[in-house]
Length: 201
Image 1: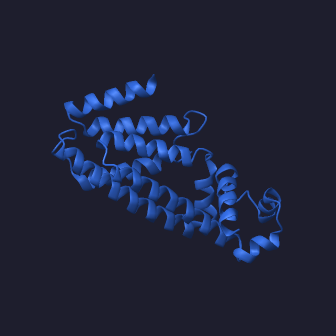
Image 2: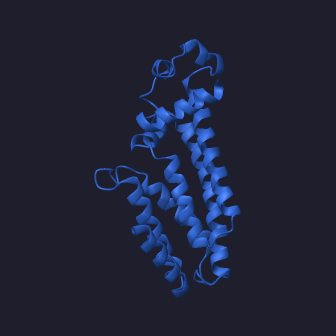
Image 3: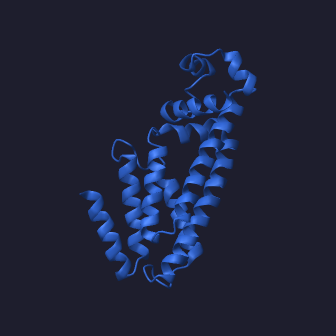
């Protein structure tokens, strides 16, 4: 039951925002009593924490599984982007903002986990790309992995990239291409162009 509550809460939080969804809403949606929810979570903050950590774990494990396939580093980044899009498909513009505003501690912890995961993945991705000759060999791996994370966080900021102008999928596509064009060699550019062309077909 605990897992079912987390699953439904995650869906509702992504769709409607962390502040907007009440324990009553969740109980009604699941057709259970509020008492049942409180038997697993002392309060809403505890539920928000369990939900965000569960979503974060799911995404981190999925990314690790993709990396384990040892694909071409450029393909790997597109594969990760597709995976993240599938899992955050219901995310509207407000959940992250609401999490930051109303649950700053949880938001801070989540950001730390996201940074660790992204930093590690991108650093490995860049090193492999350099070895394969598809990324420029003079790249500073630390800088590239950190600037990549900064960019990912920035495009989630609705005040800078409003959803009325950009869709989530569009932003991730634009950003990934922008990132890769800055680091690829001519050999890597050919791979990148073929991926972009096949995505547009």
